Length: 360
Image 1 (cartoon, rainbow, N blue to C red):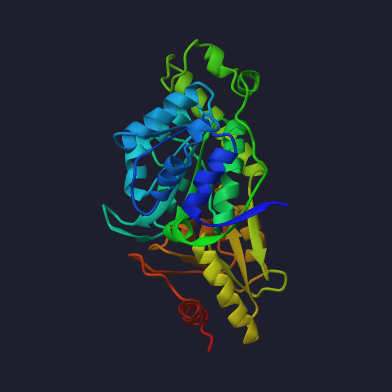
Image 2 (tube, helix red, strand yellow):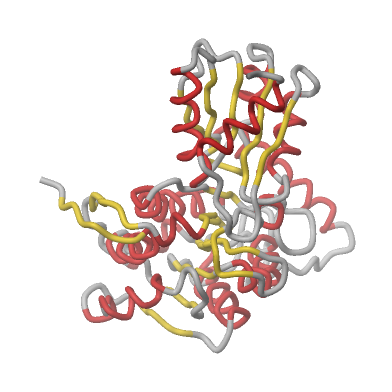
């Protein structure tokens, strides 16, 4: 029988990293995600699985340690919160340019700047659109529960190695701090030397099918290489969009109106859907689980079914732009959000929904 434990979302990240064979974690404390490293230090996995856990001098150091670990084919990760992720963006771009797999956890807080330690979803644009400089994407996963935080570590590593790309778990502060029951999956050992070589051949030779170097780099060594490489990345991202889109739906079968929300916002919207349904208003909810790749196709389909959509976000309106692009004018798209760590209630969403749709 599977073991179930009450824990925070941040703690679930740490426990999952140990149980899913992570080789290394390099991080720096920042609220509201500090429990990730605190839990790892408490569990001392270096004594049981051999996992390295290191507090770096800064977020910049930690992402560069991830870069080094990823070059060797190891399952390495870091975690931070919004200002810390900003400091990691150069390293993220280098990782994407070197096509190296790794896992980054961002437990978002309000900003810009130091902002507030209260929860937010205001890093959507930064993480989903790339983060650092240059033409690239990271795969972005949006958990909505402590169980998701646990499960997405294993899933994230699988995606990172499948596509040789950074994967970001983009959680808001509520999901990181809330305590819920988490089911612990079967323990996975760290990879053997033979398994590592099979999963990461570049770690032993430095070579990839399109780069005949004996070292790993994001530098364009030939004059025509950069354009060709960017086009190769574009092709890879298009394949990711075809194969890895994931979302969930709630009450969409007969929906005449639709909410689109991720993370904690999707959970609040479920309660709003239930309340509006009780009033005879047919509302549904689509929750993007992957923010990149975004569920553009499914939203486009639903835009032909519903009278309107609303994007519900803890920011000034970031995902709503992608929702509007997906709808392509097929239906009106509204937005409701709150800022600065203020969390909307189901009733507030209901009020905004009725105002947008001229309903009583």
